[in-house]
Image (cartoon, rainbow, N blue to C red):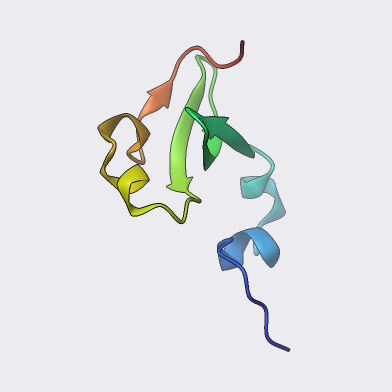
Amino acid sequence: MILYTMMPQELIFPEDANAWNKIEMLNVEGVPVLAEQLDEGYRITRILSSNPFDYLNPELAPGNVIRHFGP
């Protein structure tokens, strides 16, 4: 089987379901990211973009906390 996707292997074949229950896919500034839900917002864990310039945006760096999310 060949799986052509940019999604991480852990998202498709989760090893620990409890760890992935807190992970959500969000759109931040129009860029799809995986983020871990926290009490005060979300922490970016991975960028899921095919645009290389999105990886250079310091606001989307993994580890950054998004305090206000939504409209």
